[in-house]
Length: 107
Length: 121
Image (cartoon, rainbow over all chains, first blue to last red; front, side):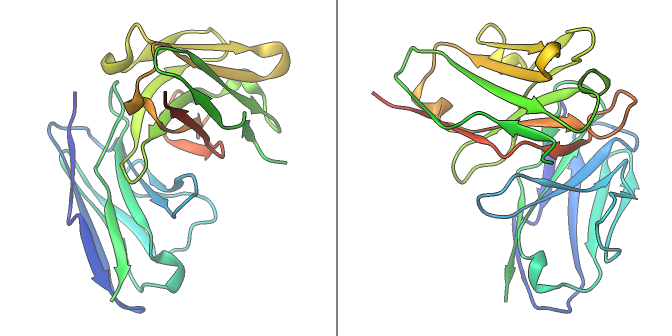
């Protein structure tokens, strides 16, 4: 199975800050990576797929990059509604696997 | 119109089975893959399996092999996840999620609202 490791596990930031979350795959996955945002009590929401494609309706302050084994999600200017937990997910092969999550908290 | 609507919360005893439904609307059910993902309270996301609603082909995570079965009823645009021999650590919210694109992909959007399954004696 492909292991997905996110860092950091949690981060504190302020509105307006730029935040980067990293995701590393245990083996190469090309560009088969997605990012999700999840708020308490809600289903995850797809933000980015295929490493850098922004899902329809997602604000442009979210961006993704990387390839192979190392990927990043960047939020260019944090907004109050962005405080949530973020997960990366590999779609290169079964079993689909997710990172353990990064909790983004208000400083 | 909500694309994926799941059945309601369930309480089961250890050793029992549960069957969760996921009714699709607003799109051609057989054109997009469906996966099931679960999440224990305070924990991360765990993929359980995948189904092609057109062919009925499935793939399961090794962890659930032999205990989970994904099926569908195309006449009512509904997918099902059955989990057997329930244990307390199966207590979780279970989500169905649709593939984003017509091509076979595993980007999940949209998601169902989730179904809480509680396993307790």
